[in-house]
Image (cartoon, rainbow, N blue to C red; front, top):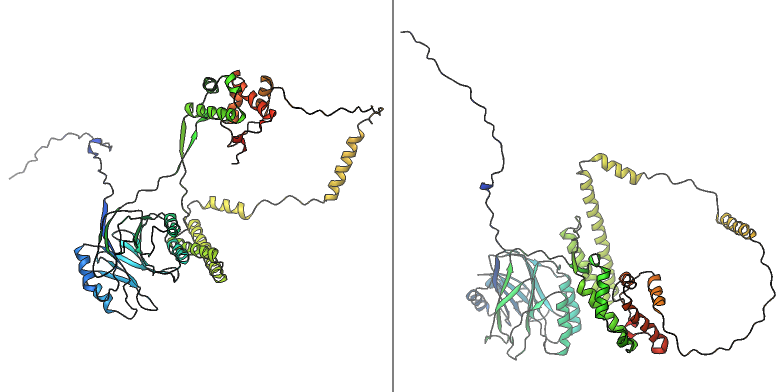
Length: 516
């Protein structure tokens, strides 16, 4: 059997050129989700001994669905481990006991789903007790609970509280400060306390009475967050009431807007337009001349200022955001915060021990900054791609051009040259001709009681001949006043009237006596 070749028909395939390009039909807008606000319940209670109330505290917190509970007067001694263990059955309990004496103590009951670390205080305080933690999940939050025993000196308490609050970095991190402050807010001495908390941008949560005596002793302060659903419940097992509230905050804190400055857009201003508006706004020359010097000055200044504000638009300009130093790490920021706390404490106490501690921290901080800068620039130099440009820059800094040759001219040589030059110039003048002295005639000094009013030409000459410098006392910039003066003579009578009033004995206007 013989196999025959089967003919195959083929034709050349055309080359297909595909161009890769964007297809707008495949683009879909991405839906942006706004920051989801988180909320959790917080409680505060002066339990007056948590040793015999562990079951009640844990059960009541679970019933109220609290995530955080601040406790004051826990009365837990340093050697007591049973009470913290009993409170840690359903929560995580962190506390600080009073080291000397009975009573006192502060603590925080935190949900088991939260991650936190205990925060150490800058120093030991004598006027109050505190316990602080830093929550890292689900949100970054700093919490401090404070107990101030009654009878402590308020000035000492404010000074030490200032040091504690200064240890918290003022950034976008949420801050919760609450506890039993034992301060009557309706007393006059509470003004300094309000001012101190307000200086740290802490806002007080308004509640009803928190003690059975009708006073608000348990206070709550927050920063960068809001609170609502406040509930104050009296309990028979303590003189203080149980406070619960809800904290709200966003998962992503919006960036702080840059400050905006406003100024008048004088470039778009027409002097002729300003001149016509001022002419129509000023009173008549007859009415203006009847006013005293203060009224005339106020009328002129207010008219000029209002006319400029009406026709000149405000332009805004945002300030440039200054980037933070790349070598400034979180560790250095923490050291800087401690340094500022020590400095403020030294300035307030003037104690040599506080000064020595501040100087020690300053020396340590300066050394750390020098090390951080050296490491940062060392890494930056090693990672640069253009080594030739880097060498050229450093070569110009390390090997500057040679200085000019030293000269042998001294100060005495310069003084001699100057004296000879002066004598040579003086010798070029002919000596003056002497004349017979004229007999002097004595003139009687008569007092001047009146002055002639200035003419329009004289006032215009004074205004136009001066350098246009502007100070805060001027109603409008000086160059604008010079620009509108020769255009319309209606502006001259007020200027003529004011110098005449001053010359006549009315004195300088009161508005021109203010210091800025």
